[in-house]
Length: 123
Image 1 (cartoon, helix red, strand yellow):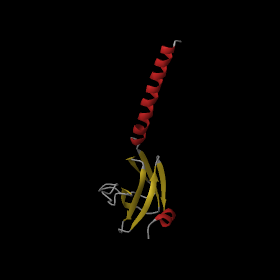
Image 2 (tube, rainbow, N blue to C red):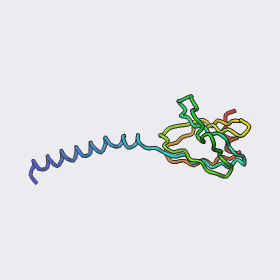
Image 3 (cartoon, one colour):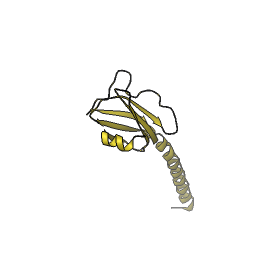
Image 4 (cartoon, rainbow, N blue to C red):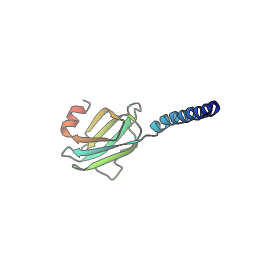
């Protein structure tokens, strides 16, 4: 192979590496995950709120207006950007439990039991 051909192949190789390297952050930024929760509390949950730790706002009930997170059922949030989140669970009587700083950097499963709530709820 001639010197000119080697230089051309080398230049094309570097260009391809640069293109691929610049695409990696875009792929990482577009990653979205799901959080599957299973209610193992022995009680129905009437509201579930989800918020980025930096938001300070709860927004809308993730269950929606006519939905209950029944005991022994699962509920999945989708399209979650990587980060840390706060969760709030509310029972029929309006008592709430806030769990802070839940890391979501991949698809997650949370078994929401009374023991887990006692260990993780804010006082």
